[in-house]
Length: 286
Ligand code: G3H
Ligand code: ZN
Image 1 (spheres, rainbow, N blue to C red):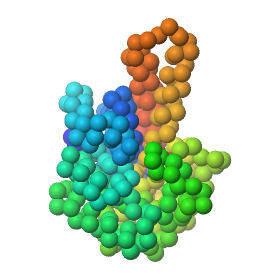
Image 2: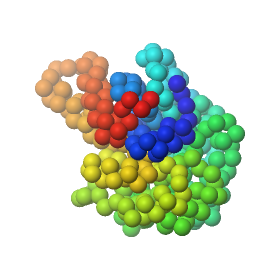
Image 3: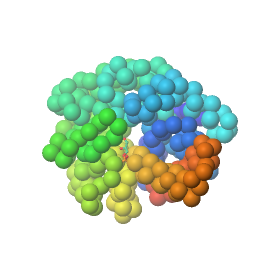
């Protein structure tokens, strides 16, 4: 069933695993991720960036596609459709009315007071209709779609500020920027685990780790042990599926049937997502 993230993340935090947010970019991503979650009997979050939603034909098209596939696959696991890095109050409301079950309001580029005020407005609307909200503090580096944060702008969240934001807004989960990066890492990721622990103890809400691509398993496990209950992955599916498309087309340059290379790309995404679900520990947690 289509649900908000609240219950699945609280359960994950209590039981010591994380639910994957896998970003969808088109039909094949959506098919692959839903099939992987069902095969693993795992809850799953479909992340939709504003850029990806636009590419796919808008929020309503996304919701219709997801609902159609869930019916077609006879899905029994909990699925959330989540706006990733919502850029404004208006965009969040638009997604909610289109049928999204969860939204992220990313006010991380605003001063604390403004971030709190904006996040609170989104929470007020969302919670009256049972939709979950994620907020961010600090700045996650790297690039995702139109969102670019260079090294100088990337910032670690301050625990006392995180505590204030969570308390004053009532968000359901929270993404403190602690050194993770969107896209491939330059060298080993350096995650701020001491701060993560502090933020977990102060706020008590399930934490979200953005930039899940390229984080070693030991760091994933450590993050989960410190209250991380949601891990976002996008780039890894893009890299692995594109590699497959290249390989198929190089091996058979005469190929022109779209399904003959998008099908294998879809299989690759499914495999990648199954691997992540197992790594995050959410198999059989539906
Ligand atoms: O919001 C989406 C994620 O943070 C994706 O990060 O592309 O580095 O896996 P990633
Ligand atoms: Zn992100």
